[in-house]
Image (cartoon, rainbow, N blue to C red; front, side, top):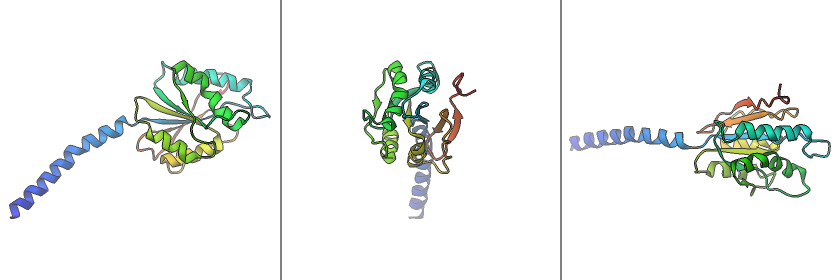
Amino acid sequence: MKSTGVVCALLASAVAVAAAPAVEAAEATKPTIYLIRHAEKDSHGLINERGKQREKCLVNLFGKDSDYDINYMIAPKYHDGKPVTERPYNSTLPLAESLGLKIHDKCEYDDMKCAAKQALAYKGPGNVLVAWEHVRLRKVSEYIGADDVPKYPDDRFDLIYTQKSPYTEVVVTSEECPGLDD
């Protein structure tokens, strides 16, 4: 009877060891999630000339020839005449068009949990880009799973929050758009 217990314990250990690479492989296939703020705006909340330059930069930065491998894009639900929803959508529209992608905009502007769920639910190839308003971007990142997410500064438009699986950490970098982020 003791030998049966030992065999079971050995079998359980073997299964756990064999499963470890499978778990690691599953983690490796989960997308990286990139979060960005909308482009620069004017006093009416509409994208200004600097913002239009940033839109072009985003096409170069995240485009077909980049290592970002964006295959899924998320922005707040677009409401015509509401700049807080128009900016993130319009900021990424040139990129979406250049990549032949749809911008998924089913989540309302103030429903950051919905945006996080949508990003985490993506199971396709490549990575996810989330464009949102900067005050709420931090909350989206937290709902994705990050701890200690830095506040997105009011005076910056260039920061990229990068979350790799298991999504608990945020790495902050700059878009480094020429003429905008020098």
